Length: 436
Image (cartoon, rainbow, N blue to C red; front, side):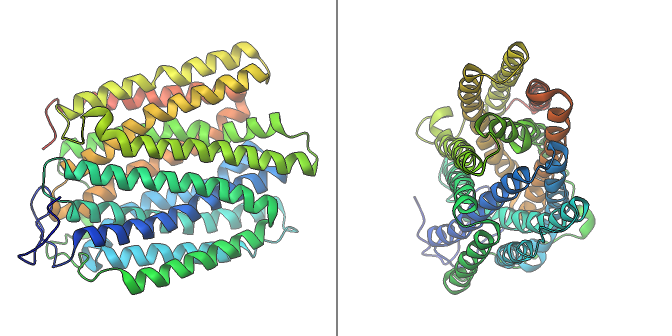
């Protein structure tokens, strides 16, 4: 793959900032392993919080509030993270992300069941905000490192970013199941302490074994004011990304888990425990399958991982394929009127189809942001792009609770369809030429 560095330098895909002498494959593996560990804990924490507080009787809107600051923190962090990485290096921001996640897990163990609902919501929101900062520091560091480490051979960037993104989501899916299982078997606080201890061990291992030479401070680091990209393609792609992830989180965060828990649990402790496993298992399967499709996206779209002909045209095509799925599911839910076994089975199949198309879209976006971005400001471009991603998740999270509480499952899915439609319209504004 052209990974040897006889000259002691590696020129990243797309040209630009050189990386100091380091085996790029070894550095890529180390960064990916750290990111895997983080996303395992991130997925587990989301399920712990969602299922624990749903079992305590929180309404869909209250559940949505628990995750809002997590997404708000993502918006702010992604703007700041690019600047921080440019000033202090990608390794520093990766270590900071892991450390803050450990702090968030430990802090959440201090939640007192005797607190009033308002106090519990405020405390969990604050801790989730800290976790959101951690997540986006780790994500920006890992994705930016791929741009600088990927081989310059044809198709190398798309393959490497697809593998990182796809494997990350598969691991996060396993985290969903892990969180549900730990909640059912060990309880809320012991599960959090277990995850914090494992993540601390991973952080120590990364500190000891991450190869020296991962990009440090960048000579061309810009002032804080340069956060917005001068490239219209990046700004339009970011808008499409915002609506794309809003379309997913409208049903994913609150709506579908609450619907499934209502269908699967009769309120007894045993049925709640069984529902935890089933809901966590389904969401884990969805995320794992989504990650697997992401990793295969270069083959699905281009064959043998070669660069895509007219990438933006294919991005618009696949974005359009996503739109009818949530609208069709919403129509079925409205027609059914109430939960039914056939509706639940149809939802499972429909949401798996949604996941397949969504994964291809997400993978193409992740490639395009790195292909469009210039190496000398890649952390800023990636930070801005993932700021839009976090904004979409924030909008989707809020609308998930509001739409489900207002109009039930049908309104929740119809809202997801509207967001998917907006993502398609934004994708169509991208220029119709091959990505550079």
